[in-house]
Amino acid sequence: MSSAGDVALNKEFIDTTIKAIALREYVLKDLCYIDSSNAFVESYYRETNTDPTTITSGGGATVKIKGIPRFAPFPSGKVDFTKVSGQTYKYGDEGIISYEDELMNNLPVITRTMVRIARAPVLGVDSEIAATMLASAGQVVTIAVGYEWDSATVAQRLPVNDIMNAINLIRKQNMNPLNGNGYLVLNGTDFTNLAVNAQVLSNNTWNSGVLDNGIVGEICGLKIKITESLEFGTPDKAYVVIAKDAMTWKEAQPLTTAMIEEPGVKKTIRAWELGQCQMVQPNGVCRIDNTRK
Image (cartoon, rainbow, N blue to C red):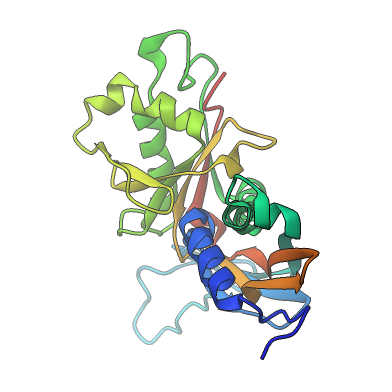
């Protein structure tokens, strides 16, 4: 039996509906490897990603890997690590529906409230991941002035070149964005400029079509994701990302929901989650700057 104020009241209906909405809305979180956490501050070690061709010995001399003489000792290589720490945050929202609105409103207020409440933590989480990508991308392609994707000179709009340059920068770091987990991530304005571009439309790797979780097509061997989380602050940027490799979402609490009822007064619908984004392999993300003028 449930009583007034019991958070379990109607929980299954609220829980399944809000989570179903949220799962469809996540865009950037889908690019992250999900790992559990029980700490307020998480630290990790970011590994260097450069394969050595020469090694500096303890005495400062440069030793080549190629051509080790007979019976000579092997050169001693090492991996460098950088310690990075981050704080766990709570993301969430709640909506309150009065008893009168639920009973007599012309609109399905509970359903609409669930949609809005589900999107709040999604927006917060994806915006945090977008900020991490902006700050910590290991590679950058800068589009020259006059060559933006919305340049006044149509012939100088060359997004395929910019995307291929980004792919190449990641490949030079011994990572492969063309292994099936590579994504081009951009906001709606940049996607529009991309989709109507003559260079793109004539490219045999271009495949348009709405799929799921923000995926709207493919180009240059990359799946395309759209999110307006990239629109805030610095909207003239797109990204090439290796999913599940470059970033980790440390999840202290997965998306959780509750309905708190005061009979005859109101219902409160609440959704929240706790976590933080870690850029564990910065070289697996390339930022494309100056996509629009």
